[in-house]
Image 1 (tube, rainbow, N blue to C red):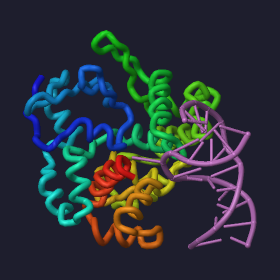
Image 2 (image 1 turned 90 degrees about the horizontal axis):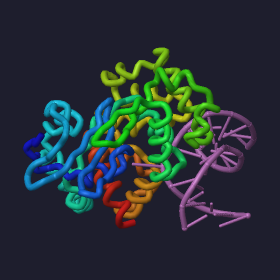
Image 3 (image 1 turned 45 degrees about the vertical axis):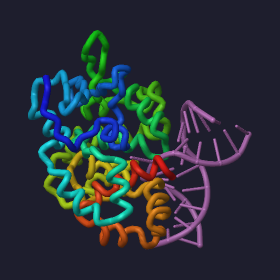
Image 4 (image 1 turned 90 degrees about the vertical axis):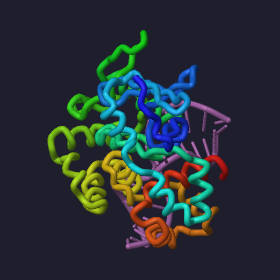
Length: 270
DNA sequence: GGCCAGGTGAAAC
DNA sequence: GTTTCACATGGC
């Protein structure tokens, strides 16, 4: 299936900017990922996106194609540094990812590096998710909270998540039993959502903020990790103490978008 | 070998 | 409240 290309999407930038872990570049230049129970392949060709998915609505939603990025970019472009970052990361789109998967993925991300984060997530899916065949290959869904909640830390040993195994199980149990109602976070303010997510062991401000931004569409949230601290320090001479105020004042409601552009830009050049 | 990686929890001040 | 340290694992 073809969908008319929104002229403001770039698959490389979108899948490489650090928000997601399960999209991989194929030899032919297309990207394959597992989203929910679907294996999706996407390719850019001329001014169109070619995909195996027959639901245009599904992709519009996941890629947030109905959002007018030119509008928010126009606002952010007033900042000279951001203008460069936006040019560099043109076509980044913040995906609407599944909350539980995003929560567990960013729990795994703590004190870890990206290649290993991806390996652990793939291994977890391979061991505990459902198999799907696509194009002669087997793929695996991200395991449900229900399935993970019945595992022990020993069961998780094969995925090599280290001390995070207990955190993963805690998240699965709190979600599957309803101690935490993830759906309710959609309706919450960022502060309420952060408070709710932080009830899970292994979830602090940074992990919670990534989940709020990448799964719950809290676009004002600006996840604060070592990289973005380094980047703001370098590009704006903002130190740790001035960080929060600077971010609120300069990026406001669009903090999440600004964070993604700056993160992607800064990681390449700093 | 030691240090680091998209932090966090727990135990000190 | 703020600071300090351990934490599984793997790559360099």
